[in-house]
Length: 180
Image 1 (cartoon, one colour):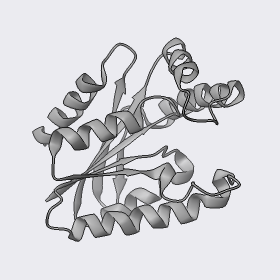
Image 2: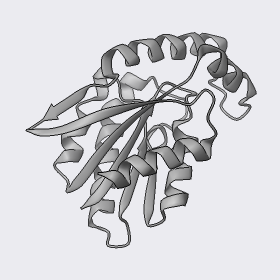
Image 3: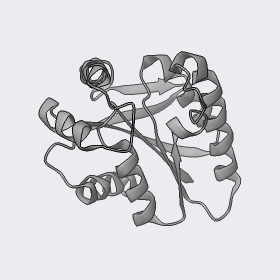
Image 4: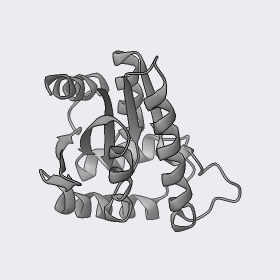
């Protein structure tokens, strides 16, 4: 069975960087950046205006990779809070074994990463506060919980990336995925 790796976490936690690295290390893997399946719109629209379209796009792309014989792994990097958790049952309808990871880091590390990022114009001080608050809420909602969707259980593994390199985080995730 193909494996679907969800890399979840707040903005700046390292989801995209780690997800891309996992795909490179595994091979025969597709990387989906959930933010980029419909957010490259001008002017930039608020998330609530694009969420349904993003979910639909992600599920559609995932189905294509599920059917593609050259792909054994799909890695999705996206912030999946309570308002987006309904995408998981949709992915479960596809023939994947799902692994869900939440990346977090200390407030100090997140702030450092945030100010170092010169690519993303939305990395403002206002959004940094949102990211820090969201991280705390997400940890309360998802940390070490097992979710049951249509009698299929999915556990959530929390990884603090504060003192870990991208390669170490990716290797840890791959080890867990291969152990199941």
